[in-house]
Length: 65
Image 1 (cartoon, rainbow, N blue to C red):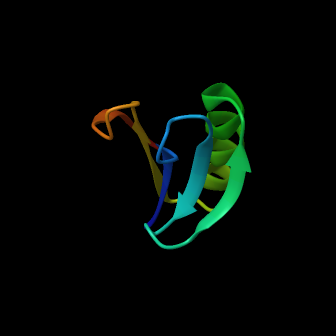
Image 2 (image 1 turned 90 degrees about the vertical axis):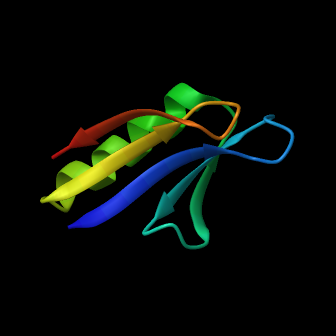
């Protein structure tokens, strides 16, 4: 199962979409855009898991596809 994540950048001015917790694949200026991108990737590659982090780098939500 692949794991995708949405995490803030260092100063929380943007959000990254990561695959398997490696180098970011996409950068978005809003969290909502990053979540939409990550959801699309996760749905295309089922079974997969999406982990969404908040601005404090804490897990806020997990979704499985």
